[in-house]
Image 1 (tube, one colour):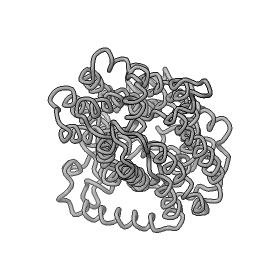
Image 2 (cartoon, rainbow, N blue to C red; image 1 turned 45 degrees about the horizontal axis):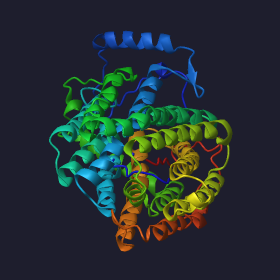
Image 3 (cartoon, rainbow, N blue to C red; image 1 turned 180 degrees about the horizontal axis):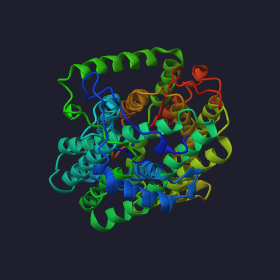
Length: 500
């Protein structure tokens, strides 16, 4: 994407009422019977029934808007709308803290660390009901943590170290809520057809793209008009939406005679179940159908990136303003939504290998057009820098989203039952680790080529090298399943991966 700013971190079962979500292994002594305190949930159930009535019959991407699905979509929406702060963070690092492109890339990589330990969040969510809930309570806490991190950014942060720490907290908030909502998606997708799984993933990522559209226009204009601190303060309100929609999650409260599930660490049953959980996870990851595709996804993500260098070039050399970059983000958000629509409408049944091959080759070729922008060749063809940047970003974003969707569908279909959040998070962390490695390699190459906030002489060579490296994983496409057809639905034999 030509003007990409560094990101400091990002099938449905018909009726879930018939399948109450209950974990009887954690938080109760062996032989204890767990009960449900229905009286304490009367108001919540009444509210959910009203939502169910309002949403009855309504469908988006072929998915009925039940309260659970509304909650999932809203959490993804928040992930997208949090893009409101991305440009503000980028300009804050560049203009207020006066960092170089390589330093900015390192901070971006540091902020992604919470995404590398997502199995921990998955294990906590699967194994430790907090106040009786395995999903709702963690969504509430994630939203509150995100609000705290951005409130600090808006008030007391004034150095690169404190900035990195607050960005890290915000990233942790999103990562934890992402694990929780992903486990909900996996539960609904297991055993469903590829088409229905694709529809559910389209709802999720369509919601995220819509959130990006909502925030994109204002992300630049608000920075221009009110400054980065104001944007940080406004962003602090958004994670509270995640806390609010937790009430819509269909989940029965887990209670034991002594309520030991709320503080379970001293319980022998907790330690035993934890050990079993780890053993199950290791067995699942060691399976060839799990390990080999994961290894490919890691390599696919670990190719170097030049986004930070391009952001400094477009702002310092070409003079792109925050308002214009907000317009570009608006275009790319629509492009992301278009990519979701294209996949949902035409590509849900195309083999995964073919989608990876075609989108990677085309994306590499089109990525080279960034050299035109750096060298000014686009102006010789009568295309302004602004229009060239918009068109380039639009096309590359559509391709990226199209190649991204089938991985999510494959992930949701192949997750074994009983450890949805943990295994999902494990494989996604490996993928995110590849992205962090790619960002750090890109930062090293940026430094090696001598690209700084004032010097861009070798930026074209950096772009060419980064784009060509995207082709390196293609000879290993054979590590992916032959296809991701509807017949591939054996949960205990396969894996699930997600790219963030």
